[in-house]
Image (cartoon, rainbow, N blue to C red):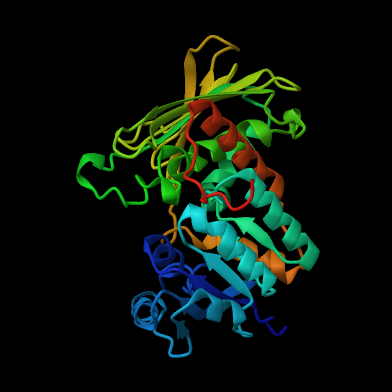
Length: 370
């Protein structure tokens, strides 16, 4: 029987910084050794502020292809008829305009997180994507990794019971006293601070453990409580905590934290049930192991069995989400069932509320839709 050729998605890349480098480096997105036969990826065009920068990016990360076009503007990538999908790796506060322009040009979009500056911008993008029948997804790559899929299976198969409480944290010491105030983590013009940069990762585990749990029936949090500590350097949040109660159908709570002045925690996430716990080991965005603890009886806390699973993540681990994008576009879908629009909206609505409670207001003009 003749083999079927894979569906190949033709990508245009917007911005050439670190996160775009991770997304397309040849050991990851463009690798032919990913044990994936139904979809593949082609790097058609790269857009930067100069042609020279785009050319350097292609030489370093483009897999050696002479066919990838280098552009000195994003608009040229959007206008390229060979480009089917756009990956957006610009700062948070540029996402709305970049995604809007890509969708207006008829391109499917994978946009880095946090997907926009606020929920209103995201709703405007989703409306446009629906009107044009185009795929749109936030690049929450952690959700597509094999380890995450296995945690979800164990969390929902019933042995541990219903989730009761969880904590997840992503912190990193950015040495903020010794970096430029224009650095993305410090500059409010770029949506700087812990919440938008690091907060999506604790949130992904709350979404998986609580929001996605079948017993929750997709009920949103019944309350959100947030608090921020700001740095006097630029006024962005240096440490943020927020608590989500899920009490419409569950009796569960998520406590989520992020900081730009502290190192990682281990475990990075702990999901607690009456019959045991799941411990996610760092790094929270690409964990390679987790441990499941089973109690002798509900609520005892006495661990009688402990199972640790370890996963090998091929390359950088970014290609899992890209494969999802390709499959959805191949199948005519405008959103992923794994990381659907309602989940991105939940994140942005929560972040808006936490910023409001923390008193973090973006500078005038940053939010393009309010």
